[in-house]
Image 1 (cartoon, rainbow, N blue to C red):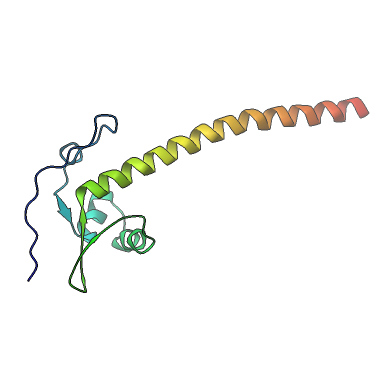
Image 2 (cartoon, rainbow, N blue to C red):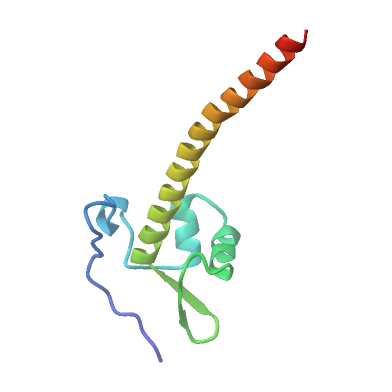
Length: 111
């Protein structure tokens, strides 16, 4: 029989600003516990696991546990992706405006 032992709190580098204590997570979570923490469906959590986006520890054939440090890393990656996307959209909106202005200029010259 496999049992989970209580692990010491997980600490991440200060750059991420996140730790298990700062987000108040237990060292090991079930998909249901994580879904409650994220205020989403358990199905959403399980889909992230199936896609390989969220690593898990399998206990036997059916039991799944998610390490808190993996949750923190996932959240940090997701936040970084959102930041990159917003930076990219800000840059694109500037270039989009330039393209639009150039088109408008061409239309005005023809008229």
